[in-house]
Image (tube, rainbow, N blue to C red; front, side, top):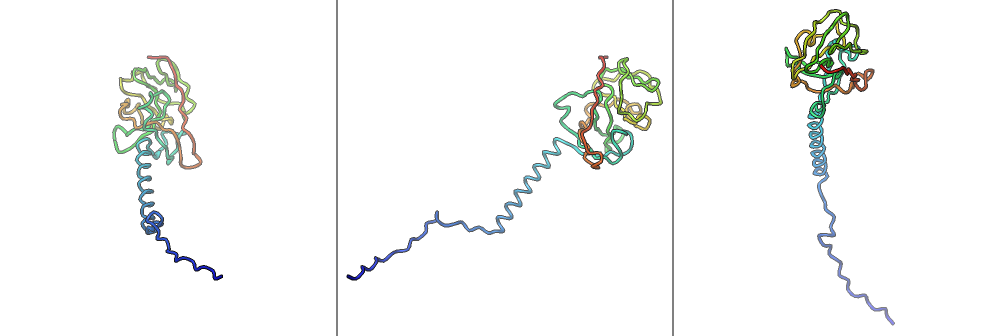
Amino acid sequence: MDNPQPEHIIPEIPTPADEEPKGSPLRGIIIETLQTIVLAVLLFIVINTLTARIRVDGFSMEPTFHHNNYVIVNRLAYRLGDIDRGDVIVFPFPNNQEEDYIKRVIGLPGDRIEISDGQVFVNGEMIEEPYIKAPPMADLAELVVPPETVYVMGDNRNDSSDSRRWGPLSVDDIIGKAVFVYWPTSSFGVVTHYDLSVSGP
């Protein structure tokens, strides 16, 4: 018996759902590149909103910072918390807003500040300052820090332009709190903020 002839088979026509999309490789590259750029811009905006980066210019904060150290500044520190004595802060120089200065907070509003015989006194109490390069040579008659200001000094007391020269600093002018040295690598590390707790004014 002869084998029966197979019935005529009609080839299946693929439906649109079965077809694999064929996109241009160039189009995919362009989309990925745009996504990367958008993400980078968003990260840049967020980082610059939360932090600032400054270069230390000069020797007024030695030995804590050295000339050409690069420092990361927390812009939100004093929006979320209080200023403390011993904090290292960054602010525009009052006599030239184009320059950023970095100094240490010594006195808060209402504090009585005095320098005598190489020692700094806050509210009548001598404060311990392990961070200074040398004791201040010049005395300072007692003064009271005005409201809404802080009294700042450089750690290199005898080579620093600070509140002793141009007066207390408005808290509104503070850019933020120095938190990290990232360059050069030999200085890499977290900024130490000493506790200068004393009794109130």
